[in-house]
Image 1 (spheres, rainbow, N blue to C red):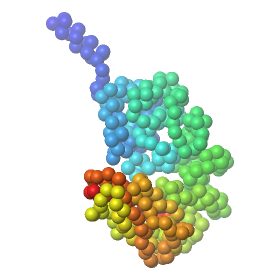
Image 2 (cartoon, rainbow, N blue to C red; image 1 turned 90 degrees about the vertical axis):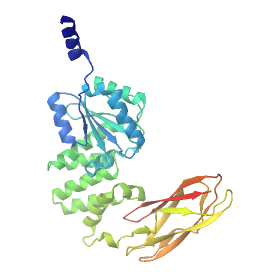
Image 3 (tube, rainbow, N blue to C red; image 1 turned 135 degrees about the vertical axis):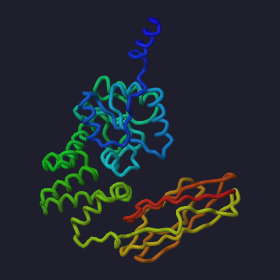
Length: 342
């Protein structure tokens, strides 16, 4: 009896705790409050429910590295949820999953990408030491991680202040100069609108519009629309260039290896302004665009065929991609899948 009691006590205090909670899609403020109560660090892990890498991360966290959840509050934030979109706009990550590690008082400590063994080891190091690790984070800010983290942390604090109705114009101006990308300029625009400063809002909107590219428009569509409305009270999204194709999935028949098969993509402009196609990229040299001189421009309410050639270099079922980059407000980068059974 004493032996059984001893085993029970050992298991109670010595066995791994499998009841540790891993939160999902809780708000930043909710997780911050939980961490503050527990006086523990917290991790916001950006995941993509459609990605196998993210599924692998979750599996490994639950099975092999659950002890990390005893050291920090973990929240899995699926980027496909609308309420989690702001993380992507704030950090512009080049890959997912991304583990964002915060101190108990909400300071951004580290950003650790991936799903490798090193990902979890460096996550544990950042949690234990409460400092930035040497694990590389590829980013779009052309800065090393230790240089860019303080700016991103400050920008997060400014975002949270604006959410609470507090705006620091000089601080956001400094941040917009240091990190001149759409999200910092958008927060400044929100602040000026909150202060009802018409001149300041127009200046901030103009600064934001200077950063408009097809790639940035794809991520910051709503932010650019806000800026356009500030600059033009008569702005109507339906009148902007709007791209459309009959289908984003094209199936080719009668294709033979090393034989060129022509096909066309009919592109429509449903808007009231010219649609300018600036670039067409294919995932393989076996899909080749017909040579056109200059920029392809499609007039309002008109359509135009774009010709391609498919020359398969192998047999079997083949899938290739076409990316059409334009000034379309609805889909700045249109993705088309080409498939064939050769």
